[in-house]
Amino acid sequence: MALSQKLEIRQSQGLVMTPQLMQAIKLLQLSSLDLTAYVEAELETNPLLEREASADGDAGSPEADAPDESTASADDAPSDTWMDDNLETSREAIEGQLDADLENVFPADGEMPTISPRNEPAQASEWASVGNGGGESGDYNLEAFASSEHTLADHLTEQLALAIPDPARRLIGAYLLDLVDEAGYVTGDLTSVAEKLGATLDEVESVLAVLQTFDPSGICARNLAECLAIQLKERDRFDPAMQALIANIELLAKRDLATLRKICGVDDEDITEMIAEIRRLNPKPGLVFGSSLVQPVVPDVLVRTGPDGGWQVELNSETLPRVLINQTYYAAVTKSARSASEKTYLADCLQNATWLVRALDQRARTVLKVSTEIVRQQDAFFAYGVQHLRPLNLRTVADAISMHESTVSRVTANKYMATPRGIFELKYFFTSAIASADGGNAHSAEAVRDRIKRLIDAESSSDILSDDTIVEKLREAGIDIARRTVAKYREAMRIPSSVQRRREKQTATGIAI
Image 1 (cartoon, rainbow, N blue to C red):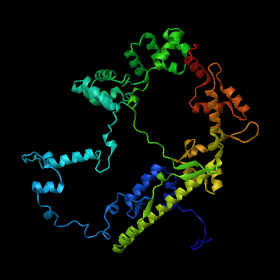
Image 2: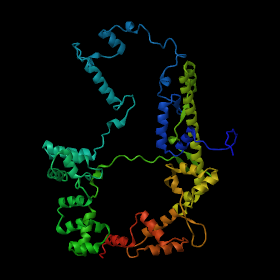
Image 3: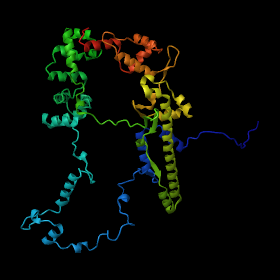
Image 4: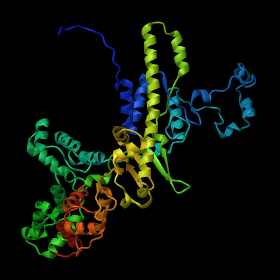
């Protein structure tokens, strides 16, 4: 068969990942903070985009503050001869215009206080800053009078200047203070610190010993045992028995009191008093000064109780960036564009701006649509609590709203919903199913976790529930679950085993093992 070239026409369908489609998919899975940052970047690069004005208008804009020239009368305009009309500056003329007695203001001899022209603006600005709370505007700002927070670094630096007068040792101390985390622990390696600073290891350890005497007690420790030991030494409670207990602090975490009694050489009453003494210590002394501000979660969706007893779902308007296309500016600039590159640039900017506005609108509609379906599927949770949370997967929601599972997955990523029961991530409502023991409806894994936690919280020190006992109680409630699943859920909730819980509760009630 001879090879030959020929042309054929074929018709087919395919999905092409255009830049606009990729942009829409990217916006769909962004959180509210990331979306705001993305829109801000687009506003800086695209001259045709502008922020949408608020409903009550921009009160602070120059256009709003400027007087209306069309309605201004000639009498309102300032006179060009105002200086000539008021040029009379004698004492009698001033008193006549002000209707005031200047004897109460200025000395009788007429000598005026001298103000340096160089100092006059500074003094005026100082009085202006006091009058408006330190701000540039005329609004009174109470925050300008609030003192700044005294941080842990500031507190330790002040003590360093008084405790170590030697400049070289003070430099080592300042470097070590930079390694202190928010909990108050030194995170760096002393050997590497000595190499970087060109000092000996003994000098670094000597300076660290001085830092460990600073307030609060236990600061600048390298581990938990050293932090507790410093506090016990200051309380004069670091005897040999307590020293042995601190050296085996991991046994205390495991509640292995029998082994601790043998190591410390004490009886039941002494070990109980020693544990109570350790509980009164602060394992993270640096947190006394607080930490950095944590950005609260801003919900993307708001769920409220409706007047008819149902649920109202709406988007949080604060998380929705509003941008518009300035068609007037585009028309004006297009007329002045001459070269082909300028026209191409303006066309691209218009196309990108149009796609961004459409993508933001489509994103808002999709988030609202998915959230509404989630509320409809989990209405029992909103009404009665986590025990009534139903098993739910992406396919169920996707089929209900005629969307693809990947779209629902992107929508529920990094999105939060504010409900009467708290703020939850959208993915919280998607849980796996656990079969029912009596053949009824399946149970949500999150509801089963909550039931396990409730059973453990209700147990007493004399009746600790093992994993097998929890399995039996759950099966009595109609939940078919394996023991290893109970253990997995318990460990995920950071709940210790039955042996550790028994030791902990017996220690708390003063019962010795």
